[in-house]
Length: 97
Image (tube, rainbow, N blue to C red):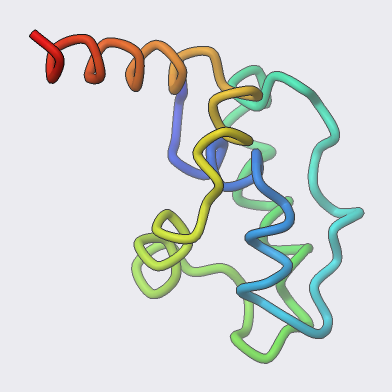
């Protein structure tokens, strides 16, 4: 189960790099394929390190998260987050009913 939304953010480093621009440190993010397995205690600190030298400044959940979510590639997130895939699959099935 996803512990925090930051796992889904990390699933699409390209969206993060595009949003934060110059100074974004992609290497600070976990390379784990299953982002939902990244311990909660590692997620925000890795985003903090990746974004600390950017024009938008260090990651801030209130100021950045909703905009970031709208920029994510759903296919990338679904491929790296099993519960995200399950959520989307379930919602799609319900909509078709």
